[in-house]
Each structure stands twice: as structure tokens, then as C-alpha cells.
Image (cartoon, rainbow, N blue to C red; front, side, top):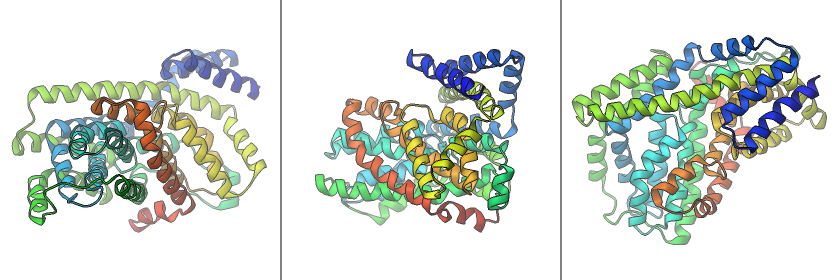
Length: 446
């Protein structure tokens, strides 16, 4: 029975994707056919799907999307980028290094890879081209750095992972063998993402320096000025305070991630309307329209992907996969290698949020079975999928960078390969050294 369900579920899903069906349709139709084959009442499909989008933590998703859109409309994102650019100076690869920092800053308020790439790329790609960086390199470093937007908190994929993993306790056999695992929570995932995000950003800066030195790319022509840095930080003070308010409130326990997203919205409205005075009614409605479109897209995927995952769990498919992997090897390092390469491959073809919702029920039991902490696993999973934003054929960041720089995706993809390579090495380090992810949550008492 299990093999037939796997064939119907995955076979139908892949067939529909192959003929060009949207991923939501492919997930929904293949799951519904499986329900009918099993003799299940289709009403159960709707009940599970509706429950999946009715959870309280999920309210943080549209709220953070709106906060990011408002920050761009209110001029906060531009000021953050100006602060990052002021640090560039005349150093080798200074402008492209500033792009990495700008993506890190903006990712800390948007939680989205494509949004980070678009906001930073609109300013930094033309600036780099003007300073004689090649179009392909300017686009590649921006697309690669944009992936930091889903690793640095508040990360939308980490929220989705937390929601997906909350209902999946460790199997009794894994608890008996490895002891009690810590519970999954969104604040804990956010804290755990900090050091990996900076490690990946550091790897990008190292590769950027090597390549910039090879191609002779310099920073700005005005030289490095402490006064200029201070002026930009002064102008961008309220923008720099946004991630401090949001993340500080979460980590201090003053409010939950869902409440933090609402605080971020009101903070941005006040700063944009009364301090910077750049937030007009037209920009406000544009931000609301963007939020509605993105949230609807995400919720539709969640609606069908959750039922897809539930059907896998109910038919013991994850347990079968875990048993199959463990029959090959019980080495945690070999398991990590298989998992990382599999996620890198899947990330090239599937949208990040759908991948998380589909694969968490399949792969989290495997992680439990070899003693991998669920928080650690979630961070590594999101880091791997972040590379998918810069690798074809899906590569959303590549499409955005291509549209800004007016250069083909093929050329950007080739230029982005060294950054994907160094990011992969960083991910292996994060996977093999759990303390990189787990030390900070433990320090904060989680």
C-alpha cells in the first residue's frame, strides 16, 4: 500500500510539475487523488488544509511581509544601504562587500530573499556598474547575498519550518537512544540563525575579496571617511533601530515573534510618516497590495503542502525513508552530507516554502533518528535552500538581478558559481559543528 501511495503522490506531483502546472495545483491534485484512492472523505482534505493556515504563529508571516514592504516604501531600506555603502571605502571589493552588508541589514527586517535582492539590487547594482564592476559580477554578488534574507532573523522560512516541526515530536525510539530533544519554537530558531548567517556572510566576503582582487575591483573613489560613516549612521539612525526594536523585543521576552511583527509595522508607519516623512498614501497602498499578493501565494502553498505532508506521515513514508537511509550508514556526517546535497538539489527546482512544508515531515524523523537537534536541522535546511535562490533553473534572485542589470541569467549564473561553492562549504561547517547554531539559544536560556 505504501509503495502505491508514494507512486501516486510523488508520481502525480512530478507529472503535473512537468506539464507546467503551478506547484499549488500539483500538490493539491496529487494529494486529492491519493485521498480518493485510499477511500478517505475529501472533506478531511479541506479540514486539514484549513487548520494549517489557522495557527497563531502564522500571523507573523503577513505581518513581517508588510513590515518589509513598508520599510522600503518609507525609505528605511535606502538608509540602511547608505550606511553599508559608507563602510566600503577604497578597499578591494569595497562596493560589493557593502552589498553583502546591505543584504544582511535589510534581511534583518524583511525575512525574504527576493525582497532583499530587489531592495538592495535597485541601488547597489547600478552603483557597482558605475564603478566599473562587470554587470555579471554585480548581479551575482547581489543575488548570492540576497539569500541571507532567509537566514538572518526574522526569517520567513524559519517561521514556516517552526510551524511545520511543532506538530512532529521525536519518535520514541530516537528519544530512547539519544535522550530527550529540545522543543521547537520560532524565537529559538531566530536566535539560532544569527551565527550561521554571519558565517555565510563571512564566506561571501572572503570569496568577494579573492575575486575582486583578481578583477581589480575597488571601492568608492572618495576614500574612507569616519565623518561620512557617522553622518550616514546619524541619517539612518531610525532605520538602524528597526532590527534592534524587533529582535531585541523578541529575545528579551517582551513580545512574541507574532507581536514583534505588529510592532514592526507600527514602528515603520510612525518613522515613515512623521520622522522621514516619505510614506505617502500611494506608497502605503502599494505596500498593502504587495503584501496581499505575497501572503496569498504563500498561504495557497501551505494549504496544499500541509495535507501532502500529513498524508506522508499517516502512511509511515518518513519512517520508511529514515530506515532506508540508516540501513546504508549510521554515521551522522554521512547522513548530513546526503541531506545537504539532496536539499541543494531540490532547492534548484522547488520554491523554498513549499520545499520546507513537503520535506520536514520526511526528513525531520531522519534527523531525530541519528540524534540531530531539530533547531540545528532547521537552520541547516534553511541555509541550504537559501543557495537555491542563486542557482538555476528556479533561482528567484537571479531573475530579479537580471531584470535590474539587463543581463542574461546564464551569465549571472556562471558568475554566481564561486559564491554558491563557498556557501556550501560554510553550510557543511554549520552542519558538522552544532554549537554554531545552538550556542546562542543556550546562552539566552532557551
